[in-house]
Length: 309
Length: 309
Image 1 (cartoon, rainbow over the protein chains, first blue to last red):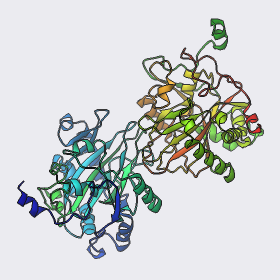
Image 2 (cartoon, rainbow over the protein chains, first blue to last red):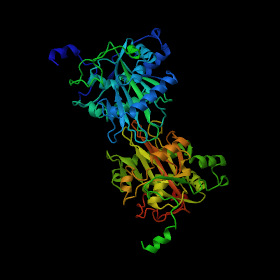
Image 3 (cartoon, rainbow over the protein chains, first blue to last red):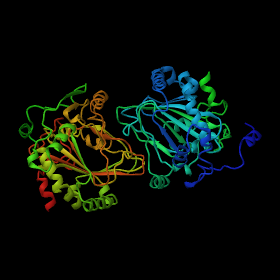
Image 4 (tube, chains in turn blue, yellow):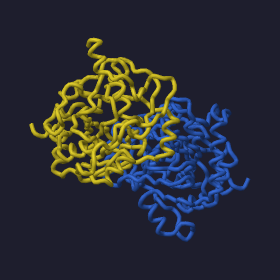
């Protein structure tokens, strides 16, 4: 890419610098949390206020049981499909050869594409972000039973900003449980309210960082002191529920999950909706962007369209 | 030890063979669960029945807050005592140099000795086991925040039988929380009812197995299928509670814990009371017994005496 092209794409200042200093730094969020209004629907003011304060929303029965069943069957099909394991979109557990994640499932699977474009999900994302949305990333996470590894604490925005060039906090993730989530099988844990702070991490991003980071996160990791203060201030929530539960969480909310030694696997479909007014620029780390299947930067089709074709 | 001495010590048949076959095998428990009666006190019949069925009991306020405070302060003192880290009773985390466990704390620390001999704890153990008891093992477990590792599923009895020569299931563990246990910081998980089955594990015990097994369990590990069936049949319980909570659990109940990425450490004092009518014989694996600080085989003083001197 020529220097001129880069200059056009890159905004003048990085409002959320990270991985540039030797010391971690906590600063205030500079963007709104809720961009839309209750008048837009479907969420009422009380629900929007909850999201504003806590950075997440949890729904136990947003989708129909038939929609969920179809999706769970598709998950099983994809897991046993050997041709998927060898794709670049597939991430394998470091110690075993088990499937940990499949990216860009809205492009690989018709069933997943339709679910990613579900009007209820897209409607909520559009209201929270106050605009039409596209899919920055989609993936299935598969945390097997017995030996499922932890995902350490992180803010998704920190990575999407530094490595993908997403400029502002105007992005929301949607996690759909494809297995029962119990307090015991390593459920998603959130620090509610942590999205009001930005934790700049130490370290420098190496080339092709995604190849290792998707297996085991070592950069973009918040420091112990900032995490301790956040948990003291805000506590920890782990929204659990039966298969089909849906959790929306703000791109900068600190989250992670413990290991899973139970025999109960934990799988979810994870969809990242980004505002069409927040398209990525050049990555703030100065390196080449991650591949398109991890951070979309070519196809900005409105997510509304996904369920239609 | 002469062959004659060994023959005297070793009973004619191993009623719970494990680590001898190539296939895992699940068999029925051959020993009672509750040996005492409600008439002995302090537990009533209903509580004894619960233990009989579930293999554990949980108490939130058995000990006074002053007793707990003293014990927590002693834990802090011991953790910062560099002379303890180098003792053979200390176990260090494999990846860091953090303290994971200290064994034989009833011999190392006056405060811990008194708590191990607390009349309420000893009284319950004596009633459950229907006899006077001694301490087979005591230890502090320290699972630090952020990077605390999991303890995989296991039956304590399987190890104590195979490696220490404890003949029968007439042993009870008592875990006293020295930190708040929440659903999020890797609490003890139990499979209630699993103590009615004995899962024989595959593999053969190597010499000095304890040196690695205390860091990371790889032998005496139940197979996936037996675990899956147990969880299907019985479910999982994770008794949590504030600092000072006490959990008694039967020596053969399957238990373990997930990792802990929260900033909240999880420490407990763990006391194993064995019936004086169930003293260890030669280890059933045929090897030398583990050191005395891990499995007592010399000092069979009644636990009642511990609080007195």
